[in-house]
Structure formats: C-alpha cells, structure tokens
Image (cartoon, helix red, strand yellow):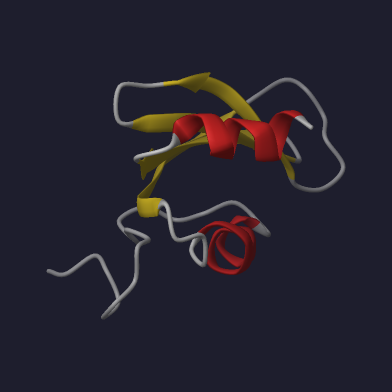
Length: 93
C-alpha cells in the first residue's frame, strides 16, 4: 500500500488532526529545502487548544521535529531537510 500521493513530500500513513494536512500542503511542502514530511500518530492531551498550533520542538540529525496541537490532541511531525536552521527560523521568529 502506497502512503504518498504521486510527487508529494508528505507521507499519508496516519490520520492528521484538523487543519494539519492543509498546513503541511500549503506551508511546508512548497519549501524547496524540505525533502520529506512524516506526520506521526495522534495522541490525546489534557491541555485545551482552540485550533491548530504548530511549534518546533527540536532539531534532529535529519531535520526538525514539530508538534501540532489541536483541541485535546497532539501530533508529532518530522520534517527531513538539509537546512534545519532556516526552517527553525520560520517557526521561532
């Protein structure tokens, strides 16, 4: 079973929290330096967020790890990139 649409950088193996798919397709996928995007499993949280909030958790060896928070849920997103510092600046500015 294929988990990527043709010519897509996003792996669609897991479901995504509300608004995350649109964010990934419109904001991250068009960036040239982003090679792949891997959304992780959705987990429940005790915190309450009103809508989608994306924040950078840390830089990895192959890119960055983002956390997407929604109402009562959180989802990890791993982004493979050759220039993680530039992507870090996008989320920390």
